[in-house]
Structures are given as C-alpha cells and as structure tokens.
Image (tube, rainbow, N blue to C red):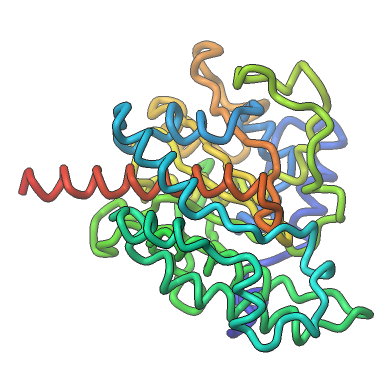
Amino acid sequence: MSNPENEKCSSSSAESDLSDVLKRGSSTLCEEHLPKCSSDWNCHLVNKLCVRYKLEDIIRIIWSEWRLFHLDEDDRLEVERCVNACDLKLNYESLQDIAPNTTTPIDEFAETWGPTQRQLRLIQAEPLLDKFLFKLDEFNYCLAQIVAESDPDMEISEWKYQCLFEKLLHLFGIYTWSPPFISTKKSQIMGRTMTSKADLLCCSSDPAVQRPILSVCEVKKTLPEEVCQPPAKKLRNSSSVDTANSYNVDKNTWSKHIGDLFVYLDKSSVNEGILGITVKKTWVQVTFLKVKDPCLEKIRNMPVNSPGSVKLDDDDEHPVLYYSECYNFLKQSDRKILFKAFLTIRLMQERFEAGRASTR
C-alpha cells in the first residue's frame, strides 16, 4: 500500500499562522492564513464556524441522527440476531497482547475464537451476514500477518491498523474506498476552496450515484496515546450529554476530522449531515456532523476576512458534532456494540438502495 501521508496536503506553517492570528485575539482571518487543506484545521477555525460538541450513544447516532432509512422493530430484531450470531470469542486489549508464535498455523489460531457450529448455522441463515464467513478468513489472515511480523521494540504501523479496520468493515459487506482510489475532494468554505483526502470512505454499492458517501473515516496517526482511551464519563440511559458545558473536550483532536466532514458534506448519502468514524489503533468512535442547509450556505459564503464567527440566527442553527465513546474492536464486549453499529449501517444502506431502485 502506498503511503497516503505523502499524498496529503499538509502545511504546519499554515496551521501555526492561523493559530497565532486567532490566539492574539484577532477576529479577522486573511486569505493567506486560511488553511487550504482540512489536515491543517485547528480548534480556532472550528470555533469560528460555531461547531458544538455532543457526546451521544453510538447506536442513537446512527439510528436517530444519521438515519439513512427508517428501520422498524423487525429490522431491529434482525440486527440483534446477527450480532449474537457473530459474537466471536476474540478478546484482547491490543495487538501487542497476542503472542506472535500463536498465530501459526493460522487455522488453529482462528479456531480458538471463531464461530461455534450453532453460530455457523445462524450466520448462514442471515442474508445480512452473506459475506461474513468469507471475509472473516481475510480478517484472520490480516490479523495473523500483522501479529506475526510485529517487533516488541517497534510500534505497529498505522497503515496496518487501517488495513485491519477496513477488513473489519468488509465482514458486513460495507463497501470501502481507500488509497490510491481516493482523489482529493474540494469544497467551498468561507468563500475559498478547501481540500481533503480521507483515509477511508464507506460508500454505497453504486459509486456512480451523486451522493455515494456513507461515512468518512479518519485513521489518527500523530495524536498522543490518551486521545482514544475509554472515556472516564459513561453515558446514562443513552441520553445525550452536551459536553460543551459538562466537561472539557479536547477540540484540537477533532479539528481535522471536522474539516474532512465539512469538505465531504455535499457527497453524503443523507441531507444536512454526514457520518464519520475515527480510528486510533484498535479504538473506534462514530461521529455525525449535523449542519442545516441555511447554516452551510452561510459558512460557504462567509468572507474569509469577516470579523468574528459565522452569523447564525438562533441556537438551533449551530453545526453539531455528535460523537460516541471509544470502543476497542479486539475486546469482545466492545466489539458486540461496534458490530451492532456496523450491521445497522449496512441494513439501512440495503433498505435505502432497495427503495431508490424501486422508484426508477
């Protein structure tokens, strides 16, 4: 795999200049201080766009905020059956916890945590899991290869984590684009052309449709270890928490991701929002950027040197980034939640595309 980092537009000086301008208290940006690429976004630029942050239950983000297609109770039960069918016994904290000498022969390695005979029958009976067993072999091979080649004195490459996560998505028949098939995306932000090149895109089964993007994935490569550790604060009763007031959010960790979401927004399969996923090693979060059309129009056309933040009519008009807790796809309990999320995405996609086909 080619190193996408070499292809990404990046300018540390642009980010530094932007940060210095806004930290000095200036409310005006000059054209030369506006970054041209989402990889250079920081929290000051995001604040200028009045983005709010809200911690939300991962399933509610997909079911209630993204909501590509309305699912009924039978659909919910189908997802639950599939989650139980593919509840594998693989259970580790990290790839470093898997001893390299246990990965060969690979069949014996996979058999220690693979599906039981009962689960195999259930998997074969569920249309939503039609690709699961075939793709599980690919995931097992990728996992075993990464572990077998790992050096205890060296960090595992982020590109390997990205490849492993992509194999995980493929278990549920989720279509993905990855380098070198991802081209630079352009969009207008604050009257200027902004570019982005996602690490990974989850897409519809027909890439030629006008709005093919299901989700924009960011694989975090340079952030500190603590960025994606389990949050200290747990959700209660799946109710949303406005983290702007409840506890501190490290907004710098979200800036690039928010920039990516803004740039890809017009290719999202849903209106007025776009689903996102962030991956740090084996830790995963699901996000959703909600931007109402009147707000988006103001952000696109706001002059770059306009003083202050984007002018919004009321609180309801603010863009909101919903984000879930972190889940480790190597841990069995966390993986069940992630599998439920991915299965819900896949089922919504399937229902949505079937409905679109029937209207042609």
